[in-house]
Amino acid sequence: MLNKLVANAEEAVKDIQDGATIMLGGFGLCGIPENCINALVKTGVKNLTCISNNAGVDDFGIGLLLNTRQVKKMVSSYVGENAEFERQLLSGELEVELIPQGTLATRCLASGYGMPAIFTPAGVGTEVADGKEIREFNGKQYLLEYAFDSDYAIVKAWKGDTHGNLIFRETARNFNPMMAMAGKITIAEVEELVPAGELDPDQIHTPGIFVNRIFQGVDYEKRIEQVTTRLKS
Amino acid sequence: MLDKFGIAKRIAKELKDGYYVNLGIGIPTLVANYVPEGIEVVLQSENGLLGIGPFPFADEVDADLINAGKQTVTTTIGSSFFDSALSFGMIRSGRVDLTVLGAMEVAENGDIANWKIPGKMVKGMGGAMDLVAAAKNIIVAMQHVDKKGNSKLLKRCSLPITGLGCVKKVVTELGVFDIVPEGFQLLERAPGITVEYIREKTEGHLLVVGEIPEMVV
Image 1 (cartoon, rainbow over the protein chains, first blue to last red):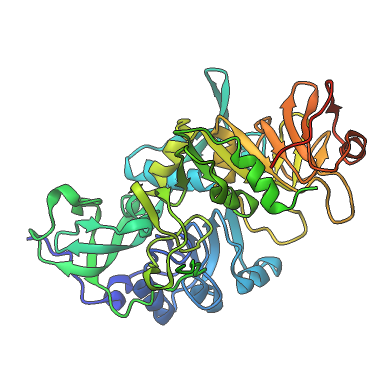
Image 2 (cartoon, chains in turn red, brown; image 1 turned 180 degrees about the vertical axis):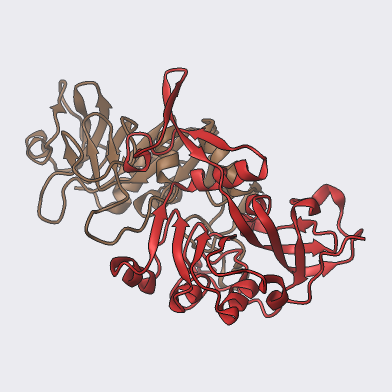
């Protein structure tokens, strides 16, 4: 019998050890695994390498793990919204590897697709290409980039079932599906957990085979970085 | 001289019916406000949305629905959501017809620098390197000179490069320029700006062929 259900975030992340490499889904603060980030702050696990498109803000998201100095290295494409991040980077406490956003996504994808590497044109002629193999195809140059090797992937979905099938909502999908496929162990927290059989198989974004642990998340804040509105005329 | 809205308005004239368009953060985002009457374009947001609509009314703000600038948005009729890998698949495989980006520097050979100032805070390249490496048509919206009055249209970029030889057109507060083998070819002058003034403010090679019309915005 499939047994992927865990009680809560604390149980889901309790075996993550110091020095682990973890992927965290989300774009900005949209679609981030809030419950598991909070649980990691509680476990106090240290020297994490975090692969995530962004690094949260000072008091939310991955910013919480930076405040408690639990992160050794960030692998991201854009980290502009976090003052504590900047301070740790400039003081040398934090290592950062910046990589193009499409390269980040596709290195996750390669991992989940069981392919060791990809060729991408992004970064050719820039410092991103330093030390990397370049191959020419049809007269254009491409960089060799390797699939990620990550101990854990932690993702957030809108709905999930007890078999680990996941459905994401709107732009909260972002990096979550390909990270879900790329972890040696994948943990999914969902806003709504239902028994297997209740989700329409045609609507599943991530098949449960990729998910090892799933739980119903609680108290989602879903903070918005920039609330922009228009007036009713 | 154009303000940022004027630059956005002028770039909007480059839109064609049926275009899929990726707009960067800043002035490029404003281009969406000036889509000409009678044409339909679909805006792509690299975080996973085709068909970006206007900002929501206050009572319809949705934390799960943002653009690449992390602003709350809405969707248009016919929109779709997808993951980040698929999004960059669209970009890399050349489905996006036009990309509009900001820049710190552009060189006369079409190189662009817009992601890093060494010694200062490094925020990261986001999706810019993927976009410039693959987009068929890149228009840059930028200020012609920096705060000290130094040209940002250069012979060679001095800042770390984002992409090589990729920019096709530049629109600044002073004019519209195509990147051609000889350098920056001046196509239009901003209202009230002379060719001599533009020449003075352009470090890269400026190509001026015949009479240069004043732009209509």
